[in-house]
Length: 472
Image: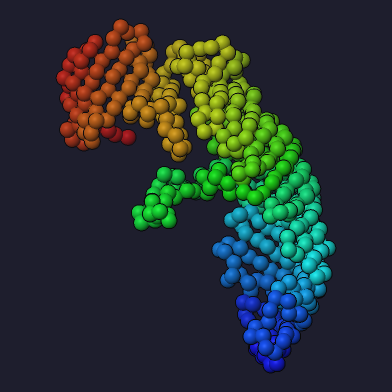
């Protein structure tokens, strides 16, 4: 309701809603009768109150995945002027709940007490318990006069900042949160009490930064590229924020997935640049780690991940060895995360075929049977092809090779086979024995389901018709 008579304006509110709660208020403005509307210097008197018995009724107003709960109450008396109102009162919350299972947010048993005193809000208590234990506490003062400022202190005590099945991190430590001249600052030290980061599942797919949506243009009529979340962060998603956090990984942070299972230890410093880019510096070392590859459980002898700024591209130095061999045999990973170099490793240095044989079978390469040769062939194919789920192509894909095999001939010579599928029925294969002077080219044409025509030239020259009969 609104009533105006002889310069006195009276506003009143009374709202009751299933998705709002109970809200009521009344405000009075006293100005000169000749004023069409109250000017900014008009005195303001009145107040309002809010009662919400269960904050879950606000769920329809929230983004998908977020849930609220608890009791909320507010009572505020207004004063000051229309252009610069002030408030005195309090905001209370009990049994509060804030949850998003997709983002790993799980705050419960929350209590809030905020006192309003004119142009200042004193946060006497903001406290939440984590889903897996621990607590979060915030105290401080917020001034919302002409130039808003804030001085807050954050304390975490074994609080689960991430609480998902695949990503769980509990933190302890303190931080100062400030607001000055429109810039937000966050400075503090934290330690990880325990945690699990499981990277088994792939991240959600995203569009490349060079994808252009037809019809979307900027003010000058030029096509606009779609930039994904990662690219947006690089371009200054934290602009206007100054971060300086030091994080100790502790003794109980475990990384698991993609064959890797290890504890992580070290110190990291997280900062932002003037343009809002997130930077990470420090070194993370593995401890008691294992790496499973080609059916073998390798022990990580040396594992180091060094951050020099770019959070998405640390330097790698990892050596994983087979534990049941006297001579070191395994895999080494070096370079940067966006373009790592993965190589077989042995002491003393051996040919790659011998290294792969020792790695897979645990025995010298002499006298291998057909089954072991087949295992080597599949492993060599996987080693060169790389992980098809990764963003970068493997060696075979870059060379345009579809077939790669390592086996033994009837005479005991090691034979390397390389092939290319030219069409659905036609393919070409080159075979070369390591002890032979030359190789053999074969052109294969699959006539029908069981019949193949093969022409061979090189060490052997022949035209063959191959008929296959399979049985259990």
